[in-house]
Each structure stands twice: as C-alpha cells, then as structure tokens.
Amino acid sequence: MWTRFALTVAAVGLISTAAAAGQSPQAAPKPPANEDCLACHGDADAKRADGRTIAVDAKRFEGSTHGPMACVDCHADLAKLTEFPHTDTLAKVACASCHDDIGSKYHDSIHAWAKEKAGLTAAAPACADCHGRHDILKKTDAASRVARANIPSTCGSCHAGIKQKYDAGIHAVALKKGQSNAPVCSDCHTAHTIQRADTTAWRLGLTAECGTCHAGVVASFERTFHGKVNQLGSTRVAACADCHGAHDILPASNPASTISSGHLVATCGKCHAGSNERFVKYDPHPDPQNYKRGAILWWANRFYWVLIPGCFGFFGLHSLLWFWRSRRNGKERGR
Amino acid sequence: MTTVTLEQAELQDRRAPVAPFAAGPAPAPAPAHVRRFDARTRWLHVVIMTTFLGLAATGLPLLFSEAAWAQLLASLFGGFHGAGLVHRVFGAALLGAVVWHVGDVFWRAFVRGETGLFWGPNSMVPQPRDVVDFFGMMKWFAGLGPRPKFEHFTYWEKFDYWAVLWGTALMGAAGLILWFPVAASRILPGWMFNIALFVHGAEASLAIGFIFVVHFFNGHLRPEKFPMDLVIFTGTMPVDDLRHERAAEYDRLLQAGTLASCGAAAPEAAAVTRGWVVGTIGLTLGIGLIGLILYAVLL
Image (cartoon, rainbow over all chains, first blue to last red):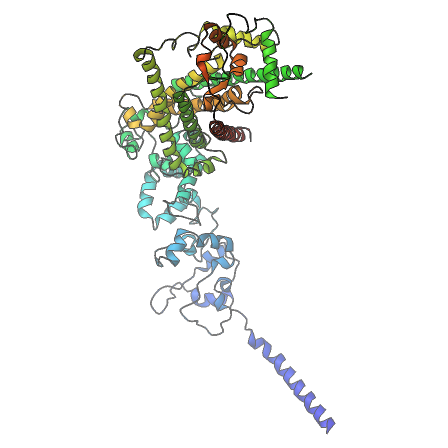
C-alpha cells in the first residue's frame, strides 16, 4: 500500500516536471527582429487596407539616431505578438518611456495641453510631429528637423503666418547668412515647455533672452522706468518686443521697422496716447556714461556723483565729529 | 552717562569764555518751558514726515528694482501698481504741503506784515553768522573752542530746511514730468524724461540718505538728544534746552525781556506720548529703509 502510493507520487512529479520544462519556450516567444518587420514594412508600396502607406525606409531608419534599436523597443506591444500580420491599431509609441524628463516637460507645455485637454488632437504636435518618426536625427545633424537652421521651417509647418513674419525679420536674415546664434523659435519659446505668449511669467523672462546677445541694450533698458517696472514683475510697461516687434524685428534704419523714424510716434502711441514727434525724442536705452548719446544726462550723472558723495561725506564727517566730541565731553564730565 | 550730564558738559564748554547768562538787566522770572514750533509748523512736519516715508517706501522698490526685497516691499502696497498709486498720492500731498508752506510764508510776510522772516535771528535764510557758527562748531569738534552760541535756527537746521524745499521742488517737477509725460512733451523734448527719471532717483538717494541718517542724527540720535527730540511733536522745549542749545537766542530774549512771553505750559502727558509714538515709528521706518538700501548696495 505505502510503496504503491510513493511510486504514484514520484511518477506524477516526474511527468509534471517534464511537462513544465517542455512548455517554457512556447510561453515567451522570441520577439520579431527588425528584419521580420521589414519583410512587410520594407516594401515601399506597402499599404494598409485604407490605402495609407505603412512603408519604413530601412536605410533612413538605420541612419537615424534610433538606428541601433529594435522596432519592438518602441512598438513594445508587438514584442509579445506571435501572429502576423498584426492588427492595424497599435499602442501609441511612448517616447517618454526613455525620454522621461523631456516627456514631463512637454506634458506641461501648451502643445500638450492643446492635444490632451483642448481636443486639438489632430492639430497640436506631439514628439513625432517635430522630430519625425523613423528618421529622427540629433539636433546637431544639419539634416535634422530640429537643427537650429531648420527649426523655423519645422514650427512653420503649422505656424505658417508667424514663419512668414519671421522670415522678413533681421533675425531670419542673419540665420540664413549662416549666423548660427541668430535666434530661432525655440530660443524664446523653448523647445518642450512652450507656453502661451501672453502669460506674465513668459513675458517677464523674455528680456533676459534678448540679453543673451544684446546685453548692453538690455542693461540700458533696465535703467529706464520701463525696465525697472519690468524687473518688479509688471508686464504693463513696454519690454523689448512691445517696441521692436516679436517675429519681424527690423533695424531702425529700415523704414518698415516699428522703430523707424516714420513709425516711432505710432509705436510709442500704442501705450502713450497723444505721442508726438517731441515725445519720441525719449531715449529708451539711455547710458549716462555715454556723452555722445546724451550730454545732459552725462552731466547730470557727473553732477550727482560729486554732490551725493560730497554731501554724505561732509555731513557724515560732521556727525561723526559731533558724536566724538559729545562722548568725549561726557566722559570728561563723568570723571 | 545721562543726557543731562552731556548737556551740562556742553554748557561748561560754552560758559568758559562768554559771559554767563546772569549778566545784563535783571530778567523777568524765566518760564520752565518755551514755545518753539506753532501748530501749523508741527502739522507741516508730520505731513512731510509721513509723505516722505511713504514716498521712500514706495519709490525704493523701483530705484532698487533688482534688489531681493524690491518685489516684497512693493507687495506691501499691493504690488507695483499699488505702490505707484500711493507714491503719486503722497507725492501730490508733499508737493501741496510745500506749496502751502511757501504761500503761508509769503502771506505772513506780505499780508500779515510779519517781520524777520527773510532776515534776522528768526529767519531760515542763511546769514553771515551761520558761517561763523559753522567754523565755531568745527573748533568745538576739535576741542579748540567753546560750543557756538546758536540762534533760533542753526546752520544744519537751515540746510535741512532748504534741502527739503529745493528737493521737493526738483523732485516734484521731475515726478510730474514722469507722471504726465505726454502733457510734458508739449513743451519738453522726450529726452527730458530720461533726465527727469535720473534726477528723481539721484535726488531721492540724496534725500533719503540725508534725512534718515544726517537729519535723524542731528535732530534726534546724537548723544545730547538720544533717542529723540520731542520738540517738533510737542512744540515746546524746557527753557534749559534753549539756554544750552541756543544760547544766543536765550540771551537775546533775556536781554529784550521777552523770554517770559515765549513761555509755555509743560507739554501734556498725552502729547508727549503721542510724540514718542510718532517719533518712534518714523525713526524705525526710516532706519529700516536705510537697512534695505545698505543690504541692496553692500550684499
């Protein structure tokens, strides 16, 4: 009785162990390799049922920054699939599963808000709309959609009107001449944390951005009432873009410029109703050290540089002597 | 060391070479207190002091807009716009007070026929004796002579007075240009706004530094007066103070026999308390603002 039971248990154990060992390769099938995917998608004429292309240019993919990666690294839901062809609808590629810091930045941007909250699902860009899909290149690659020189075109593919204005401005001209530090969209608007252009925080930060190149001009602006109020956190006074324009900035020598002599009265008049030719003789970028820019301001600066230290020095000394004399007399008296 | 001792020490200095006050005709019995400032003068001081403090507190955030405390100080007045509004209201009030005062002086001189406003011992106009007093004071500082016998107004008080008058006129004009730039542009070129802003700021630095350091010391914080002189709040001072501080005036009144007519009752306890409260608030706020300036400039 006992022996029979033991034998039965051993037999059952042996059989089940063998079964488990034999089953394991079938439970986790090998994910499809890139060649497997390209067997279908490598055909330039490959189409879905609805006629849209599903072709992937293998060469461009291999040359892209993601070239060394497997298709299923991004299309993760295909890694477990055993039956091909797969269904038409796949899970969305989650770039943030690797690029998580950029993903969370993007999530706070106006583009993500538009896509996820405002329902602009077709119009608002996600990662691929700017960076591409199977042909993503590093921004340092001149052919990349997000290379500095190409950013205006990339943004302009949606913001066509702004692109038109930008192209007319001095910054675009400089960029086209090969001046690579000329500002492009992302310098002011950032790449991933793009905000509405009318938010206070964004507008207050702009002056510093212009100052990365125009440091002296911004320093002179910060001496003015406009600049000081701006520094105090108010946007109701003029900052750079209010006078110079935002996308179509032109030098004062260009008659089309907002600050050309012909347009200055109107430009100041946007805030100062009643602006006139005499009014616009104001210097929005004064420099008390620069005699040629304003002799009277230069003299006023000199005058107060003598008067203030002179006055404080004189009466400071007067007070110190007085204090010393009073204490001394007091001590002598106390003795 | 008490205040009294220091004043007595000064008196010692003064007494040595000059005739003691007992000389001259027998005086009428001296009152214990004498009147120095009438009600309108005291009110003028309170208005100037209040508006000046308010102007400084609302203007400094703009002058030191890059300082760490600028936004915080402005936020006490409801941010930049609130501070700007308070600044304009106080500016108009200070300008109004000074204009009223100038009108009052002229009215007293030419309508009421008051004499001695523009020259003489009771006048604010600088006179030769102020130069003499100044050099006398330098000698006293150096231990080379007695403390000068001052008249009704000392040279440093006259400097304070004219600094406020001149400063208010200049800053008021500059302030009005900045307040109404389009209207100003009817007669002035736009670059005058640059000058106006610069002068407004420079003159403000001068005025704030002068009032909150030099005036505070001369008027209140020096050892003889520490921590403050209440005469500008109560209007009266002990006759001993007059004898010590303004010996020439004391002697003159004594000689003329008019000292008794200047006599006043000792200030009421409530007036003294009021003076202490107002003076303490003013001194504290002023010194606090100087602290903020030093923080911005030095750190």
